[in-house]
Length: 194
Length: 390
Image 1 (cartoon, each protein chain N blue to C red):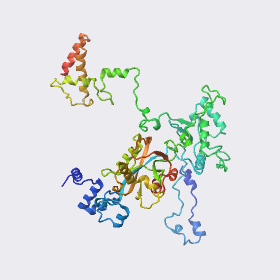
Image 2: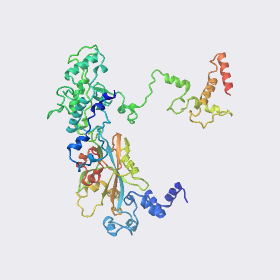
Image 3: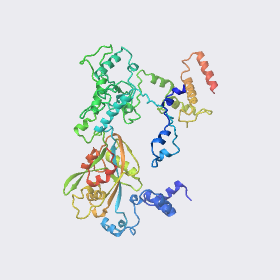
Image 4: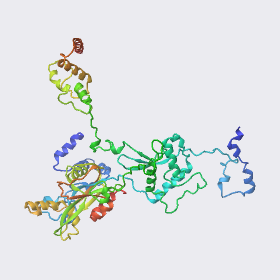
């Protein structure tokens, strides 16, 4: 099996005899006379095929502002239109106000959520007047053991306080509309809290 | 021994009206002179607003440059005032156009690549007997079986594979041709039902925005969307009286450096004062990219020669101010100016000269070739080394 390898097939007869017989003793070429060169020719490398690369086309890329450039790609599509890129993204176009995040709330779902749970959950809204945590502040003054003091402004410091605050506010506001069972449940809950 | 923050405060308290740079140099020199001298990599003599006392300055310079010294206090003041200017640039938005050599090189590389890559496998990309498959077949037939759209008629595996060079005068390699070929290929030839569309039914692809804009065609030099592949520089106009008649002189916005300001702070201030705040700009660095020295106007100088100086010299404005208020003009000392230009970039917005404090009446966004025509010679020579390649 080893004799069928291309390296063995390519091995030639020794050159040593030929050099010594035909060529005169070479004085000006040190390569032949140097002891590093082996007498028998040796092939350490075999045939290395060229890498197979997929076929590539030239493609025209059109950015969202209409500017174009060409790329080499395997896709046979001639034109690629980009829908979102640096030309219509707020990160790269900070002064373009039309790209800013505008809240679309046609169904009023977000407003309904805010009415129910306040704005403390909004990442970008500061606690405004009328929100639960703002309105409960004066009520908390007369509670001596209240865990939250007025100095706490950041609603993200303690979310548990927010929840409890919401609960206490609710209990005062709409206890009347509840059924007896629910009322009992709420009272139990509030006692537990205290 | 003082702690670091209190040291600066003490300096500020003790010295009356000394700029930060001077205050720093005076202390370091007294405490560790060799160290400070060894560590400085920039010329301090240029930037120091108040020079050493008059005994050190050569008397000849005193005589030539500060001519009207009415009081002994004024004779100590320097012959130059420090100013800072801004060279506001709009970077190129497009890559430059290819040279004929470059486009020829790209075509050569593409044809060479044809010979070296694996052949295109159509079946991998198009499902058999679909509309897109039919579409591809039609287009491939029109290109005489060449899968690539932009290399012209070249078969890398045939008998004529060696013939990969185009003839002289061929436009195959030009970018316009490549663009046209790609756009033509992007056009759908087969409807969604798989029926071949007649030429009049085909919907042409929306063409990309051209390199030349509307502002280019109108040559509107005030707009920022012109010369998209070039750097644009902001220049402003001031109208001065030269020999009795008004003349327009162009230059970069400049302003005096206050003693408590750094160059970059002055630059930002000057830009806001001159061209308004309605711009999204960025001052690239604190180091000046160019400098210019403006000598005071000498007696007997021709008005044509001093035209450029009229754009810059602040004492002329002060004289005019005093004159307007009825004060004698001899009280203003005639001093030259050393102007240090900083580089700025504009990202968005536009210059607005309305109500500017510097008396600029007009502005332009110009390329470097246009700057050469518009700017006075000395100004152009002093700033030309900061220009970008294009």
